[in-house]
Amino acid sequence: GAVVSQHPSWVICKSGTSVKIECRSLDFQATTMFWYRQFPKQSLMLMATSNEGSKATYEQGVEKDKFLINHASLTLSTLTVTSAHPEDSSFYICSASRSDAEAFFGQGTRLTVV
Amino acid sequence: SQKIEQNSEALNIQEGKTATLTCNYTNYSPAYLQWYRQDPGRGPVFLLLIRENEKEKRKERLKVTFDTTLKQSLFHITASQPADSATYLCALDPTSNTGKLIFGQGTTLQVKP
Image (cartoon, rainbow over all chains, first blue to last red):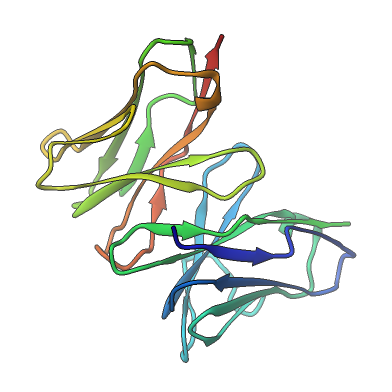
């Protein structure tokens, strides 16, 4: 099956610093990718839609200046958490879909802000 | 308001029994509904997709039904095994065929040997 690779799988950073998370679709081109956040014992919440070659679309309540998304190629989207704070600590997951609607998810990135 | 809800947070069953998980949605008209498995600390893995014109779909020990009148999907695992223990998520694409998914809160299944 198709593979979506996410890196890093975990990161610890100091409060106030920025962290970049990469999401790659390894065997298909993805004009659209999605970023989700998951807090402990909760479900995945969609944060934004990453569009290749254009601006990302953010869900209501998600700060676009804090969560910078770049989708510069058909196989790579990046999420940068800027000026991270402890409340940004969460599990971040990306996904990409082929035309048949099945979504492929990355392994997730556990972000801990100390 | 729009909602997608899975009726129980946790389900404990004995090995060999059938597990049945429920997903209900409100104020959506999805063209299809999907089920995913998520293990702790991992991203979700796709299991099954069922379209609005399909009443039932099967894959090995898994069976999904979709009732657009009741706005409900049922997910069954027959002959359950301890390895089936995981969190199961239902999801729908509110805009149809974009890959953008809205998830239920998940049901954690524990299969005891």
